[in-house]
Image (cartoon, rainbow, N blue to C red; front, side, top):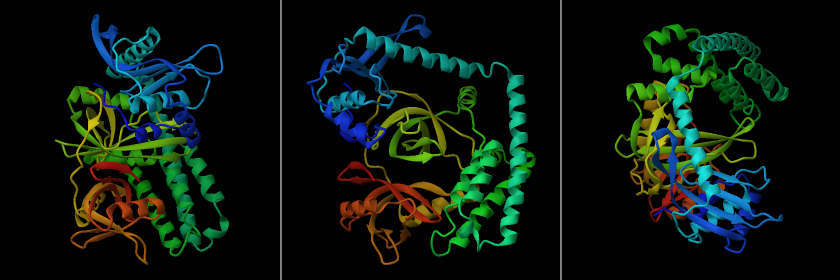
Amino acid sequence: MLERWTADQVLRLAPDAASQKAGSKLAAPGPWTGLGAGEICLQDAGDEGGKAAKSGVWGLCKGSGAKAYRTVVDLEGPAWSCTCPSRKLPCKHTLGLLLLWSADGVAETADAPDWATTWLTGRQERAKQRETRQANGPADPVAAQRRADEHAAKVADGVDKLGRWLADQVSTGLAGADRTGYAPFEAMAAAMVDAQAKGLARQLRHAATRPGSGEGWPGHLLEDYAAMWLLLRAHDRLGALDENDAALAATVRTRLGWDQKTADLVRRAAEQGSAVRDHWTVLGSRDSDDDKLTRREIWLRGEKSGRTAVVMAFGSSGQAPPLALPVGARLEADLVFHDAAAPLRAHLAERHGPPEPAEVPAGCGAEAAALAYAEALRAEPWLETWPVVLSDIAAVPDVLGWRVVSSDGFWLPVDRGRAHDDALWRLAAMSGGAGMTVFGEYGARGFAPVTAWHEGRAVPL
């Protein structure tokens, strides 16, 4: 029997509020025919005629034309397909179908129509093809190495240019940065994009928000400059780092803007058996704008390994990323971690069954959370935050700003730059002054809550 999602989990897939509203209007049986959901057996061409199964939901939705729209969802992705002309993904028909299913409005059956089975089978075959490509590696290793060398040369030129720019900013002083505006930062960020050092571009655009941002902004801007300068100097010593600390070298490359290719990570994990299989609790999920993309971060914690991971998914502007996992659920899966001095980012390689309900995760006190961040920062000096689960804590408004307070009296400040007032007031209302379990990120500027557990249920903030 399929574990049905909640309406909140479905609506989190929507690309915008208008899609949520339109999808909710279609969450009724009236416009639908041919509804069904269940585990569908597929012909697995990659397994000599064996069978594979997919969990799906499907239906026909009456539209403005003569033909009904064919809508089908692969619940294990999740992924979706609809014959409507909408450019929004997922479309309102997909959202309506999932909302109807979440409300027990779609009966389970193993008899899927041919069009739904064909699409689900196609996804299975494409997944097999991707696995084959990942196992075989690049088609032309010589060309791949040449592209890597060209990339390294461009990054080196960008590092040199940014180093001179930073030296000029500090030598002329920071006092006038609030009058020059955003343009100088953006010009240098664009140069870093051209140099294929998008990580440096992202840091420059963050630094551009400092001037005039409030009391103490020159100090904050200088901190940003110092972190970038340290990264540039680490780039100059990459050769020595590769020999003596490969994990830190990988961190430096990632911070500069190198991407660790998923195919390479998966292939190496298969060779070395380094994938981490565990039952992972979904601690939280959050969307943010990343240049012209929508970035979704999904935090997981393994029950046996105790490891915390963040899986990232990206969608084009105005579109929800293709990966969504229900917060508060658990799933058995293989994770492949990226190389890093403080390994956190991971690729969701393979799932072993659908998500299922999870218990409230165990947490620590505020003092232990601060020590955990300090330990991670010792390994990776550019680390801005570290994910933590706090237990028995309450959110407390204060004249100097919000705090999260442990039962032992130890407290952490709240990072107001990443924590909205409405989320903090909701957290305070749910706790009622008593302790509760909260997941979030803690860093030098404080704690930012992401998810709270209220009466055993995960509540995104």
